[in-house]
Amino acid sequence: MIKNIALITFFLITQSSFAQSDSTRTEIPLPKKCIVIEPGIRIGKIIKNFPDFPERGPAVLSEINIGQQCSGNKKWHELYGYPTAGVAFIYGIMGNDDIIGRNFTILPNLSFTTKKYRRWGFQWKVGMGFAFFSKKYDRVANPENQLIGTTMTNMAMGSFDFRYDISKYYTILLGVSGIHYSDAHYQLPNIGINFPAVNLSLKYFPSGRPKLYKNDSLPDFANKILFNVRLGFGANEFGGSLHPTGGAKYPIYTSSLFLSKRYSHKNNVQLGIHINYHTAFYDFIIQQEIYDSHQRIRAFTGQIFLGHEFIIGHFGLITQLGIYFYNPFFGKLQEIQGYSTGFSNWIKRYNSNKLGVNYYFMNPLKTTKNNVYIGLYLKSNFGQADFAEMSVGCAF
Image (tube, rainbow, N blue to C red; front, side, top):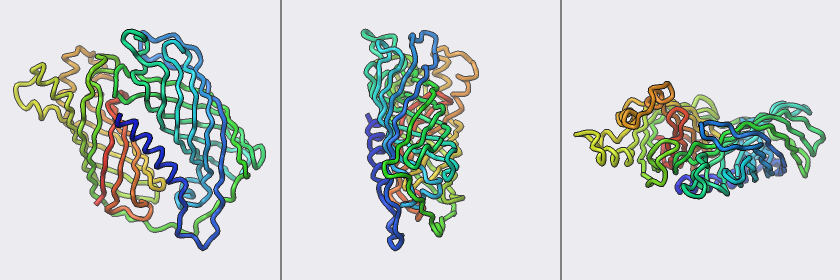
């Protein structure tokens, strides 16, 4: 699966990037790498989000997060307040072993801490990785599991914790988190799993907390308006979140043209258009004889979008809010399938959003022009997953 290969690639690249140091400051002794070990537990309950929802008890995630405290080896560390970069290994009990099963997750993540020089403060953590489920939907053996249609899904997590430093070696954290599992509409059904949780964890610094290196200065960044071109590929199963199941996986070809401008070392804004071609739309139009003419053109969609990017080392974390200016087939399909005219179904015709990550081959803190990158994005229509996209792009 394209999406899962991309997530594994992102995981491997992330770890190699975090391990590198900035070679431009070899004349100054750099701080030693500081390993952080953080065992923890998250307890919550899956939210009921459709009528025929299976019974479930508490969901319990047991995890151990192995990380590195960013202490100034790379110049972006100071920009983001010296976060902790880690990989969490999570064993999940979902509250219904017979239908939903259990899962194992590998979750790259970043933790950001306030008031580092005080014994107490706050931490927020964000992560995205991939999960393996022991049970998935099966038309015969497990028809009640309409939450998860594939063995392998993505997992996204955000948490907010109160932090208290017990000593230079230990920190205790207590807080809340939000967890989401989905296969990005790759295989149906894909209602997805969402649940809030209460967290408790203990950070252990085997060598004690490191001293934090501060840069004397940061390199200037180019703030010119750049023209960007991006080409990508995705795939999904044609249908709604629940049905039809067992269908083919249809390719989706994507392209983006947009302008971007840096307004600080870590912030980049974007404005442009996405043009997508859905092969599933074209096949359905032809098979069902929906239109008499321009069938292929009506399988395209077009969106105008406004985006923001956080630059973190060689990576960029992307959020984009879009509006369809061309989407003729989607509304027609809703009419054919008898969807209600409620607000949720109406706004899906017009709203299109993306979350994603870019990896830049040249450090964007030092150069922005002619910087080639690869990206992984999750696209949705309003709140409903549409497809996962892999792409390559460049700014000129």
